[in-house]
Image (cartoon, rainbow, N blue to C red):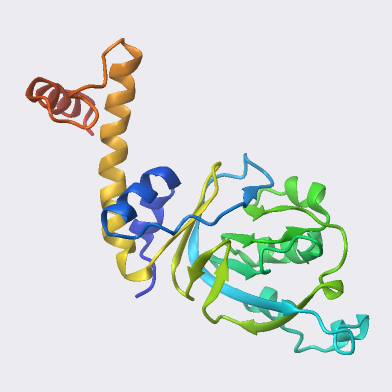
Length: 238
């Protein structure tokens, strides 16, 4: 089922930390992509369905510069076919010794209307990518071309990215902390629960800033605190 505009909008308002808790409640412990970070922390939240690219180790007789002349080269095709509103997720085998992509390809994704890009490897031209108003996540900068180490092979197949299984159509959410993957069938209910959790946590933070202790408040087990929360929701309209 395609990601609804309502769920997409809701997921833009919640944190990956809150989503991780909602997923943990459902027995999903390993959905946060490890060791990736945003190049531009001010690019805003990233929400979109996964469109994937898988790299394997390069083989020297196949991965020459001439490979880029092939119009069917999977890296180029993935960039030019990534749907509007989707996130291109790359399996670079957690190897950032060569780039997964560079500034030109990431700019092309942005101009096509993609929601963002994630690799568990690295990007070249990282200063230029960091200046784009576009969510991009990687492990670290990496100047060498992908051809020196990676061979692009499969498009839109199940992959591993940062120790997380990513299936085409999974919902990918990124913020200043990192990237989390929500199984497509859970996106609507997880988004609703995370939005409710965010409302409660905003109340808790407000109370803590006023000097209130967390025992009985967080988690909410004290009847007086529960009554205060209900009154706060009525007063704020949340």
